[in-house]
Image (cartoon, rainbow, N blue to C red; front, side, top):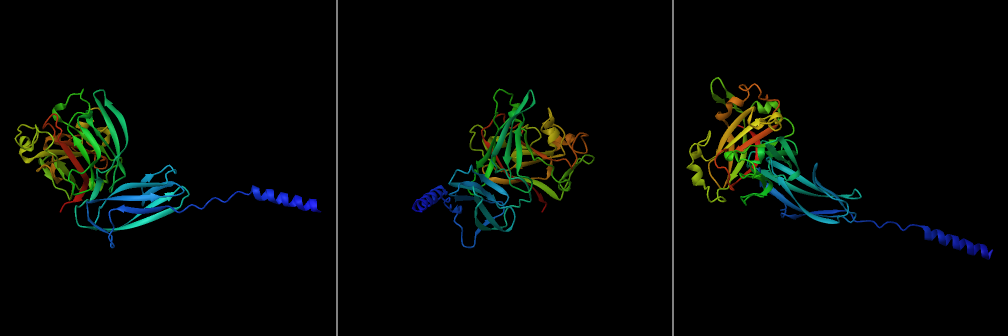
Amino acid sequence: MLLAAISLIFVTSCKDDDKEEPAPELAKPTIGVVSPTIPAGGIVTEAGSTITFTLGVAAEAGLSTLSLGETNIKTYAGTELSDTTTYDYLAKEVGTENLSFVVEDAQGDTAVVTVTVTIEEGIDLGYLLIDFAGSVSATEDKTVADWDIRTLYTFGVTGSFGSSATGEVVNQQSKLFFAQTNPDASDNAKVIKIVGELADTSVDNWGGWSHVIFGLGTAIPEDTITQLPAWDNAGSVTVPGTKVIQIDAYYDATVDANFTWGSLLALTGVWNADATLGYKIDLCIASYDPMGVVDGGHDGAMYVGYTAYIGEPNKWVTLTFDAVDVGRTAHMFGVDANSPGPDAIDCVKIIPAGGYKASTSNALYFKNLRIVDVE
C-alpha cells in the first residue's frame, strides 16, 4: 500500500509538471493625441484648412493598424510595440465632425481617441476632385511612344471623388514633387509642386511647354460636367455654367533670378496669352483614353478647355476657370468629332504657362482642385 501511494504521488507530480503555464495577459492597446493640444470644446478651424495630428500608439501584443473611420492611416507588421505618426486632416465642409482614431493590436483588441472638430466658413471646397496633399504610393515607367516616355505616379487623394489618382508629365517636360510643404507657412496643408525643368535633359525642351495629366480613375458624374461653362462654336462665345472648376495656385517668383515676376510681365508674343495679366494656366477636362495613352493624344481632343491667370506671385490665389481657352476650341466637344462626351470625363490636364520660358526653377504649387457652384 505504501508503494502504491508513493507511485500515485509520483504520477500526480508528473501531470502537474506537464501543465502549460497560462499565457500572461497583455495590456490593451493605447492611443493618444500628442499634438495639437485639444481644447475642452474641441478644435475650431475653417473649411479648406488642414490640421496635422500627431498620434502616439502602443500595444504589448504588437501593433496592427491605425485608422480614422474607413481611412487606413498606417499598417504595422505586428512586431512594433509603439509608434508616433502624423495624419493630415482636411476640413472640407462647415459643421461639426467627431474624428475617431482607432488603433488595433495583433490580437484584435482596439483603443479609440475621439476629437471634436468644429468647421467654420472658409474656402468652399465644393466637389473636391484632388486635394494634392497625398504622397506617392507607386511609380512606374510608362512608354506612350518612342519619343514620349513618362513616369506615372499614383498618389493618395482626400476628397469627394475616390481615394487615389495618377499624375504624369508628357515627355518629362517638367518635374513633379508630391506631398510638399506648403510654401505659405500659415497652413499645414501638403501640396503638389511643379518645376518647369526637364526631368530628362536628353529630350527637346519644347520651348517650355509642359502637359501635366491627372487621371481620376472613374468618370465625373455627367450632370456635374454639363453644368460647367461650355463653348458655343457657332457664336464663338463661352456659354456660362452653374458650376465652375477652381484650383488654388501659388507661383514662387523668387527662385530663378533670371526670370523674375517683372520679366514675366514684360513678355510679348507668348502663344495665346496676355502676359501682362500674370502667369497663365490652361486646364482641360477629357477622357484619359485617349488623352493619356495614345501617341499625341495629350494635345488632341478634349471635352472643353479653360484658361486663367495667377495675378500675383508668392501668395496663394484661387483660379476660377470660367473662360474657355479660345486657342484650343477646334479640339473641343461640338467641334472636334473625336472629343469625348460629358459622360466620359475622367482626367484633368493642366498646362502651366506654356511657352513662357524653356526652363525655370521657379516652382508652381497647387492644392484643392474642385468643382463649385457659381455664386
